[in-house]
Length: 193
Image (cartoon, one colour):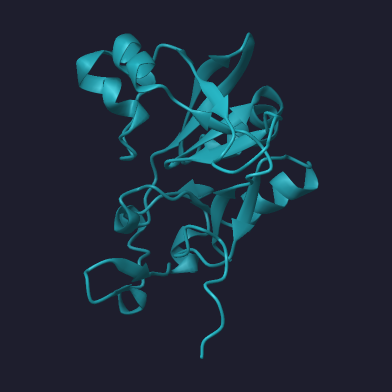
């Protein structure tokens, strides 16, 4: 099964300050903070100082093991020890600091498109041209730990059961897994009338 990774709002969410990424990575690569494209940064990376903030309406105070935000994951040192080797098969783990601690930003560079894994017949748009549904050919993504899709402008992060099972068995905090890959909120939209 394919899951959409969602931030658990009972934990703080990581934020990459745009000025920090622009200053350290330069004009050409500094858009890292707000460009979710699956582009590699390892060759130009300089560790960024990131921040953690509560989601709107949340009273969260705890930094999680893992945080999802804008097509990337934050990994604490503990989460990196658990997931790092597996995730580096489909992206890069970039070192960051926060409040005197160390962690990583996982930048997925694998896409569903590169594996020809989009179910075209399941891709649907509303009357305004907004994407409302999509799906993946799971068999083509079986060996891909984590990926993105151009369909949602690379803003979602998706994984299979091996990543989800490892996070659950190791008790990693900060994210949830939704089997509804096309729902960025992870919540039900209500009953069909």
